[in-house]
Amino acid sequence: MRAEPPLLAPIFRSDGQARLLSALLLADEELSLTALAERAGLSYPTAHREVGRLEDAGILTEREVGRTRLIRGNPESPLTSPIRDILRVTTGPVVLLAEEFGHIARIEAAFLYGSFAARAHGVPGPSPADIDLMVIGEPDPAEIYAACQRVEQQVKRPVNPTILTRAEAQENSGFLLHVAANPIVPILGDMSWR
Image (cartoon, rainbow, N blue to C red; front, side, top):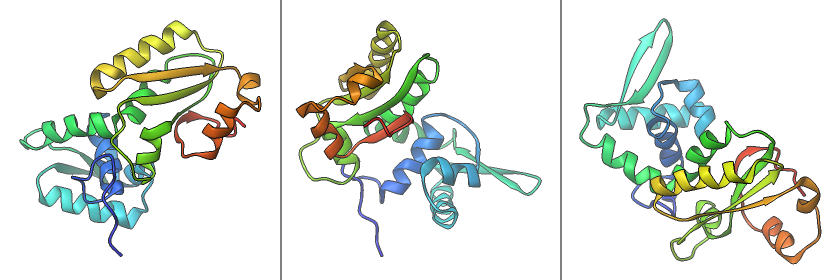
């Protein structure tokens, strides 16, 4: 069965390939094949096949430490930097926001919703003009807005945060019922906010 290309970045052969490349190239880390599969949300055999294809293309490189294969982006490849730029705009908001929010206290949950989340889940429609973000908890709003501004500069789209306490998130407003009924993309925390 052939996987469909992701709507946010149809230049990649599959959503799994885009997630795998994001995990490696946006964080600029070296990961074991097992850790990479887990972070990209892929089965080990699928990650193994994708890594093999991307190594053959020269985009990824590996080294062995004992019996562990450590995979990373190939800094010598002329493709690595342009692919990283494309990933930053297409899959980057999740990785970059997770990294930013990891340093902010009192965030219980954070996720994307709206058109960006819908396209990430394969729902057809126009390319999203912005990124809708929900933050549940009681973080310092100034820290959230500053983090969003830093991510905006990298992903080239406005990031629009909505910050709610847990009690506010559990209200039965039309807006929250709409958010809960449509696709979301988790960034961090407990997704049982409703």
